[in-house]
Amino acid sequence: MQTTIAARVETGSFFDLGRDDPALTRLREDGAQQALPFALMERLVKSGIPYAEHARALPSDRLDVAGAAFDWFDGILHEQIAKEINLGTYEILEHTVVRRASLISALERLASVHPEGFARVHEFVRGLLWVGLQPGTGGSSLTSSSDPALPYVVMFSDKALLHIPPNTVSTEPSPRFLAENILHEGVHQAVSFHVLTHQVFADGHSSQTSPKVEIAWRAVQGVERNQFWEVDRVFHATYVYNQVLRFRLRELARDDLTANERTCFQAAYDDGMPAVRYLMDQLDHLGRYFTAHGHALLADLRHQTDAL
Image 1 (cartoon, rainbow, N blue to C red):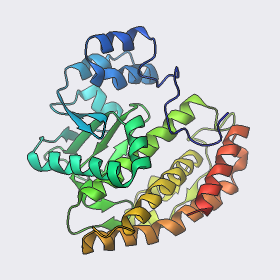
Image 2 (cartoon, rainbow, N blue to C red; image 1 turned 180 degrees about the horizontal axis):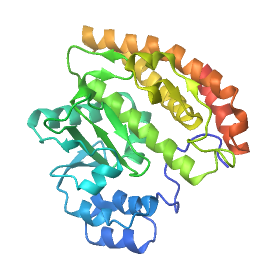
Image 3 (cartoon, one colour; image 1 turned 90 degrees about the vertical axis):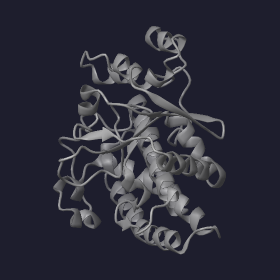
């Protein structure tokens, strides 16, 4: 069995959108490929709601970048889908010329400067939801998000042009920040696929009963669930940090950044390095919550972290 998170979707696995399956085959034959992730959602959520049929009615713009195709969804997201992926207070934002240019620029940046990152996004991302809080909704908007319940789809807001999570906020928008946020969510999807198809965590482990790891740099957010993370969340975050820190290093080595972009990427890198080392050290003490395969993944993750 492989000892690192897969960089490609395994042929014939649950997440293989091209596999021989009646529901997936019907959608492919009908030219409704944009609904394929939602057919998987039906199997994962098991609520009896026909998510794929709802998705078939959702308009989308097809974006073709460097040989990869993405469905940028438009229209109104069905309330049952929105509720399931925690977008109940959000709406899909208008497809403007500016947003389209930013999105294409972000994807092209990944393809040209971070080909390994783009390959991961190409493999694990098919659908894009650019969202914003509904009028009259209080609270702070998400920057970017993905949900294991909806494979292949990532969500982000206008904040993704300004915010490098967790704490770097720019005064000027940049598609390069959006590129990192899309990569961030693509890595989450890759980890989710692996965890759902391999036994990574020991029998009896659950997020509800998991020990919590204190995340001091999230204390300023004031939300308890962001200050104390479960074992699986720490595992996810450590993989994500390993990928986005490499992204930041590659950007910092470029000579085409604006002064503001350079300042933001440097700040994010400087914050990220001690964070990933701390998370990795915590995982080293949590081995009893992992299977033998999980231990192999942790060893690979330690090697990746030490190489940063």
